[in-house]
Amino acid sequence: MATESASGAVRARIEEFLLDYVHRIDDGDLQGWPDFFTENGTYKIVTRENFEAGLPLGILFCEGRGMMADRILALETANIFEPHTYCHLQSRPSLIVDPGGRYKARTNFSVIRTMQDGTSQIFATGKYLDVIVLEDGRPLLAERLVVLESRRVDILLVYPL
Amino acid sequence: MALSTAQELRTPFNWPEGGVTRIPYRLYADEEIYALEQQRIFRGPVWNFLGLEIHIPEPGDYRTTTVGEIPVIVVRDENGDIHAMVNRCAHKGALVCLAEKGNAKRLTCIYHSWTYDLQGRLKAVAFRNGVNGAGGMPEDFDPTGLGLERLHVEVFCGMIFGTFAAEMPTVADYLGKTMADFITRNLGRPLTLLGSHSQVIHNNWKLYAENVRDSYHATLLHTFYTTFKVNRLDMDGGITVADDKWHHISYAKRATFRESAEYEKSGVHAVQYKSNLAGPQLIQAWDEFDDGITHSIQTMFPNLAIQFTLNSLAVRFFAPRGVDQTELFWFYLGYESDDEEQTNMRLMQANLTGAAGLVSLEDGCINEFVQRGTRGQADRTGFIEMGGRDIESTDSSRATEAAIRGFWAGYRRIMGFD
Image (cartoon, rainbow over all chains, first blue to last red):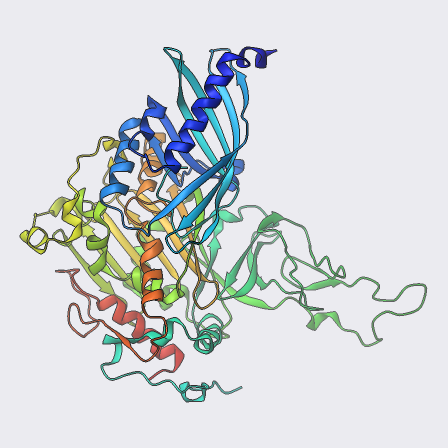
């Protein structure tokens, strides 16, 4: 069975990697965000409604580390928004290997957003649909598709999920 | 029923001296005025945006939306004609369509199985003749007067509009020729839906109506515009206000950019972001029109805007959800004639706007900052004199709040706040 090869040491490494991704964002270390992706990796946030209807629009869509770095630079130096933090909660991923040796992971997640006045609320919930490759044994995202359950964003979305 | 006047509000309302250059903060927070807007504006003589034709392409397709706060069904019937009805059963007032969208041959209220055809006529009432010879409706029961409440509907450039007013000019006449021609430029071809999402903003709906007419703020708050030379006030551009002032177009011509010293001198936030894009494909674009306009935003009273930012075409519909909350819908569009490369450029440029828009995300919070900043100060007013005190079109500058004054002129007229 295909899932066999994703168990054991590789699975542990990928789980560690996926946890590291959300912890880094939660801790505000956004400069390192593009480095979780391959050079030409893609990152796209879509709504479940559009995803299931086969509509291609992303609420946010980055192609390659360059665009991701632009996003981070923009939010750190240009964009205006009220200070807030994220706390990601995520499930254990399901993991399968495709014939090309790439790992396909699905992880459910919720993000609780806390505003500067202390309001904490569920900001986003959904699933990560990832394609992960190993480069020199290190997992990297070739693709991260963030499928949001809700089509509605509260206020704005500026930090990556 | 006679319309109440502003003086019949529990707290009488008088527009302050200075007319539309002074905006009373009470208008952003007053529940009674908000309720009056539902009657005078959304149930009144305006064309309300109900959705796009491509939302309901097939017979039986329906979609639900709101006109003001009123729930509305938009449906395409067996003949392909589009109808709009209030989503309220004639019996007890329950929602008839629960789903946001779907396809149906008949519309049935689940509460007591009252069934309507796709034009809103009542076709069947459960147990009308009773059960086992007992109960049932009275002898003289007449279903003909018990249909769903209908709106008048008109389709213009792929957009579906509805009105509760008995007599309305056509949508084109409501817009006026200049406004109608520009919508035709942008939407007057077969459209495709690339996707949509919405954003809840915590402010009165009129703050967003002002915000999209505010060409003064656009390049100051939205740093991304300025830095990457997508839209600056030192490009050729202008503001066109409709004859009746409450709709407008703001436009810019990117090829005419001449760096103005004013940006550097003012030390405004917008010039401090000096980055070359590491991912320049973000704003890779092509010229779609030969009029040189590369950026435009057009409003239509009361709560619609159409953007064409480079090649990113979107309809923005902002629906009131209470006096201090608004749901802003983004419908991103392409043309049926687009090739794959063009579609990809539109999808990439969609990063500029929307809830996570590199350019527009500030609008998600800036209007809330006004809502919060003006709280508890109903007797104070905003000051809207940039570009003078009049409401005239200009092809020489967008450093003006003329279109905002135009919105308020129309608002005063329709609300009876003279």
